[in-house]
Length: 193
Image (cartoon, rainbow, N blue to C red):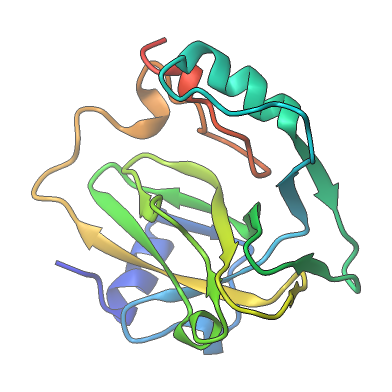
């Protein structure tokens, strides 16, 4: 069952949900909390790698890391996402989720209507997660989109599990994105480690 606004506030007060810094009051919806865009992005460089072989999972991390570069922009700057381009971004806020909750990230409808996809597949926030959430941006529109730090970019809602998980994200072996403070490239090669 999804938490209402009052249940979200109770969970924050009890430390079961962490949102740091806490967004202003007008960012609390009826069952979600708006999150904003941070200032660090990862983009693909133009490289001579002919393809990324997803069946060779051990090489995916090293190749994707070599093909991507980190871009940090200032508070008054804009990150330009061109049509057909993909980039990783992050929330300004650090998010923590208790072991009996799961979070769901949704993009804003108003931004989707101009072609901005905020997540492509990764919209669940595991029980026991702690860190900044990575956005998977794609510009499906025809015009470049200017993204600025602090932009209300998405919303997180929370749902209770039937019982606390015995495998919280932060405590399981191979929690390759736990505690991330910036957008990380694919860690596919670390699966099972």
